[in-house]
Every structure is written in C-alpha cells, then in structure tokens.
Length: 310
Image (cartoon, rainbow, N blue to C red; front, side):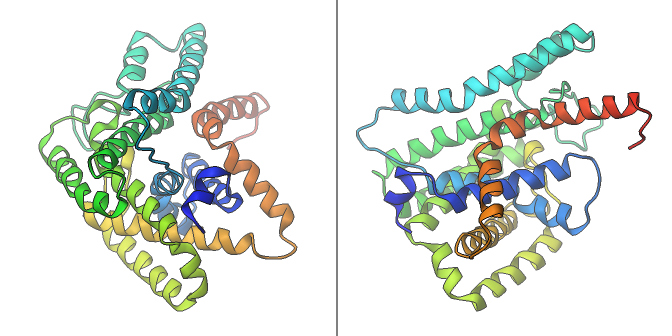
C-alpha cells in the first residue's frame, strides 16, 4: 500500500474502516449499553477518523496556507454551518431553542468546563453535539499542515516535532479551567493520530500486520489490557481516561485492528454484499454523524405517537 495510491483515489477498505467507526458512534449515542462493543468501541471510534484522515493527508510544499485553509473550510466548516443552521432553524420554529444555542454553534463545544464540574455551562443542546468533531478536525488539519511545513514534509521529523503539540495539549488539559472553543485543546492532542496515520500509510503497517497474525494477536492483547486500565474516554469533553499517553496507545491499537480486519474483508471472497454496504456507509459518515441524533429524536417521537415504548 503506497502513499500515492492512498492520495489519488478512494481505498474501499478505508471506507469500511470509517463505517465501523460511525456505526460505533451510532450505537453509543442511542443511550443504551451494548457491553463490550460500547466500551471497547468507545476506545477507537474517534481516533480512527483522525488516523484514516492522516493516511490520506497530502502535504504539498507548493500549496499556500490560504489555499489549504480554503479547501478544508469547504470540506468541514461549510457542512458544519449548514447542518447546524438547519437544526437551529428547526428548533427555533418548534419553540424549543433560543439564541444561547447560536452561541453554542459558534463555540462548537458540548460544554464550557469538564463534565464533572459542578457549575458547568452546556452548549449544543439542539441535537448538534456530534458536530464538534468537524471544527476539531479543521483545527487539527491546520496544526498538522503547519507542522509539516516546519519540517519540510518529513513525516518522521513531524512525529518527533509533534512533542511540542503534545506538551501544549497536556498543559491546556491540566491548566485551563475551561474547554477551549473549536476543541483547540483536543486538536493539539489529535494531531498525533494524524501523524500516526501518515506513518501507517507510508510504512504499510496494515499490510505488515495482515502477514503477521502473531503480532496482531499481541496488539489485540495490548489494546484490551490498556483499555481496561485506562477506563472510558470522551474526547469531545477532554476526557482521556487515566492517562493521555495510554489513550494514544489504545486509540492507535484499536484503529489498526479494525483496519486489518477491514483489509482482510476486502480480500475475502463472497463478501461483496458486505463490502458494498460498508463502503456505502463509509462514504456517508458526515451526514450520519451530523444528523443521527435528530433522526433518533424523530423516530422516538413517531414511536411515542404510536404508543410504542422504547
């Protein structure tokens, strides 16, 4: 698997990887517990999107920052604004929203302080909470581009230089009394997953793991043990479990395991129907992410009108 191939066209099994990530999101956000699927899926369902984004990230030395900014804004901020304005207008017409919700859209964070704060201020209460990811990814991309610019496109040097970003993320996590707008604190942390994805593509980590099942089993053991020790996480509110460093390991290991499984799926005969289904879901993760809570609400309302208890 060469980097150039990843950059020039869609990779079917990568779409399947994204499908796994969004399906876990959909399950977790039902508000019900699905046991191990909820717990272990929650370990990688956000990192997997950053890592796959890193795998397909293309740094072009000749590209100006303004041009890159415009491209990512079109890809991420335009949908963010569109979906959020739709939800805001819907709930304003319904009479269950106010201009505080507009402030939430501008701040793009689920709450002002960590979840365990007694005097917290909650934003994004119009079923738009999942859209925080779009602004976070936008900021992460910009930070990654600036880092790649600084090291002249050398991904290995970027991995080392990323230590500065991690230090900033640690300081913001432990020293800032509030969660920063557009998940800036989280973005400094998430850049590491982007870099890991870039290195994984360059060095074909997935292809190597497919050929070495013993290493894959070892990686699975590390993932399970580290996840159980680190505990549940929630990147959207800056909750990384017991250790920010261990969560990097857990998120990376879980993502790689899913990638290997999806890669094998696309090499297996008589799975075309599953490949097509996963590919379709993976190509439409953005609307699924932004609107699934709204759809859940509509379904719940219809079922309640029919007298069906959930």
